[in-house]
Amino acid sequence: MDLSSLQHRRILLGVSGGIAAYKACELTRRLRQAGAEVRVTLTANAARFVTPLTFQALSGHPVRAELWDETAEMGMGHLELARWAQRIVIAPASADVVAKLAHGFADDLLTTLCLASDAPLAIAPAMNHRMWRHAATQANIETLRARGAAILGPDDGALAEGESGPGRLMEPEDLALALAQLENAARTGGKLAGLHVVVDAGPTYEDIDPVRFLGNRSSGRMGFAVAQAALDAGARVTLVAGPVHLPAPQGAERIDVRSAREMRDAVLAAVADADIFIAAAAVADWRAETASAHKLKKGRGPETLALAQNPDILAEVAALDRKPFVVGFAAETEDLERNAREKLARKKLDLVAANEVGADRGIDTQDNALHLYWNGGEQALARAPKRELAGRLIERIAALHASQRGNR
Ligand code: C5P
Image 1 (cartoon, rainbow, N blue to C red):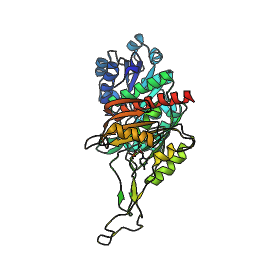
Image 2 (cartoon, rainbow, N blue to C red):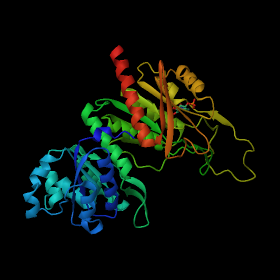
Image 3 (cartoon, rainbow, N blue to C red):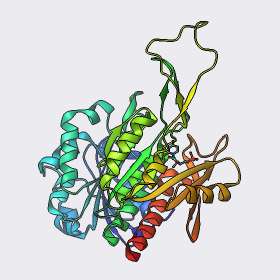
Image 4 (cartoon, helix red, strand yellow):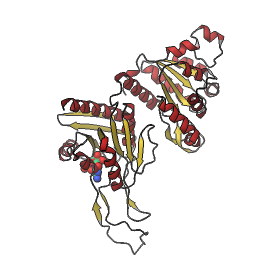
């Protein structure tokens, strides 16, 4: 994992109350391991879950939890701490802290530091899924994002109360990576700044009747990770998503579709002003020739299902007169390079990201490995979490796109 952009960065980590506070310990450790200097401040509620002493040991610095602390003010005063920080990260950020920051409250040390600092803010929310979805929280998050804060997560999954939904704090390793990507983007001015990137993701469902469909096992994770990485690189992102159970990356425009034909229409509309199109969807190649309006009855249904070919979205985009930089995926079970290069040429693509799929590889998995092919080059991206791979893929796309533009 490439966390080198975190080296020597001065990061102020604000920990607010919630059971996820324990993950902030691991985050502190990972940031320090990556060479960052970390100072931690806890809210009063956070200190009920994890002690300041834990963070003191992990960060190597005294931890402040209160605004009015005379001894601490004699060391590094709170305004000095606010100036010291090159980045403020709040992980976990409770609904309460998010609300306070959105409205400019400064009634404890953490919120005061945020208000008194010019450092860019990264917020990793963690809360119950109803609190996350609440209109008040969503409005507060939008306010913060519009003001330039990076919103990291939350993840979708099991929550502390035994429920499930969006609201989990991102895993520390993913948070560290996301922060590294932010530092990277800040340093480079965002490799895709000013560009419009369209990503399609997930499976498509082709209805046979009102209750049955043809589909596939794609989870959409790779495409969603690619959309996130493009956002991190400063792009405006449109994400055309088939039926998946994933929260959209904050800041992406999400268009939900079901069938290949719906996906095609949404993609063609979105790419009209796009610079880059990344086809990460597992589009169903065939659909039922006729979808029955009524549920087919057992015994009276057709014995064979007549299929019709679906449009090839990727090939259609690549054939446009004013075509964006086009990236296709190739999932192969054998002969990776030959098949990928054939696809590059036949569909007139700019880049193919190929992976071997099998029982435990590629589809519906957390990890993936990719091999990139383009005219005149190739690059192997070793097995890694999809978020990390997506960052590397976007770096390569940005470099090729820039050199193509330079050659025009
Ligand atoms: O030819 P193959 O299906 O292997 O190509 C895979 C690539 O083409 C993927 O990027 C996929 O998103 C895209 N594709 C598409 N429309 C289809 C089939 C595949 O956009 N109908």
